[in-house]
Image (cartoon, helix red, strand yellow):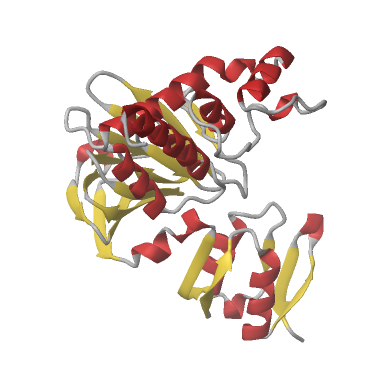
Length: 323
């Protein structure tokens, strides 16, 4: 069947699938870009809006046992005792079409029901904004969203975030991180806020980056990284895949000083690595590690640089030279 109803049902099924994919623990920039390409079709955009509407209207009712039974019935399943709390978070499959399928996946995506979003140490989170843009927050990050009639303003208060911006020439997308200001219309870029400095990495499109009070503004090209400190903006070419690998749950080191590598790994750990090897702090480290995998990094560093791993205080592990 290829009539209008069949096309609508196909779009609704795909919309539910996108909700599930975007709610995964790790979502690559390529997946996010593919989502926006799919959403360009008006029928798909309408289907996705129905997903958002149904979830927004019912999100607060997921723990009501009667609602739980109604949703189970809509999915053609019998209610299971003790299962009502799974209505908003469970994955029921993709066979059901329409509102029931929409509800099944609604709990997997952060919708813009509040203005402040944050992650704990070791956590990452995908936030879907009302304009169709998305933000992936890295470990220990916090941002505030403020949309009004003529601009979309994001304040990155701490940490790191990857922004995939929905194109809208009438409303620039502005990210403020300390004294740095990044302005985009439709693009993909990464912003990392550190003590005294902000790093902006451009994946695709173009952005304008400025320092304190709008000084030193520069137009960035894809493949560049800007380092912003006070009024100074310095741009260099970088390996974008390596700089944004955190969004896929990896950290990439290429001739990275050991001290800097340890600091990067520690961003994802509650039980830290303590480096007690002053003479080796500048030794180059190379490798790819899963974020949060302390054991793999410690093992590689110990074997490659002649270090000894020992227990430190409060669950930490200490790296020191072998005696």
